Amino acid sequence: MADFNLVGIIKVMPTSPDVNLDELEEKIKAAIPEKFGFQKIEREPIAFGLVALNVYILGKDEEGYSLDAVAEEFAKIDDVESAEVTTVTRI
Image (cartoon, rainbow, N blue to C red; front, top):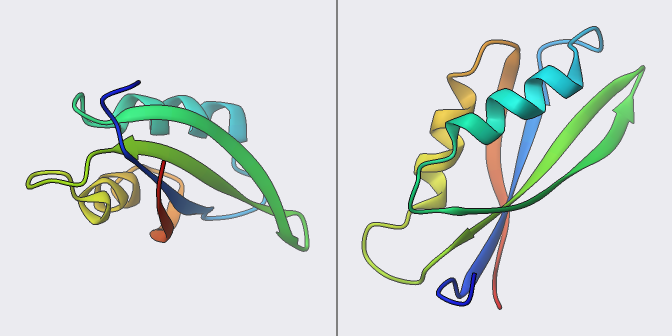
């Protein structure tokens, strides 16, 4: 983990409140490209039973590390309505 110098938060919105979040978290973890690191996932209640997942991804501030590309991979997962980078911070 010492090689990473950025942490980004990608907000993943499920398609409905009925989506199994435990299964969705496993699919998200599996979709993270190898060169990135995974820190954690936090659940954020939105409204009417809908819960967003805030995925903390570790990366480097150099060519080839695009958090937007990771968000695009998350958006391709079944049961994901949208995925967007909300925060990027140096660590």
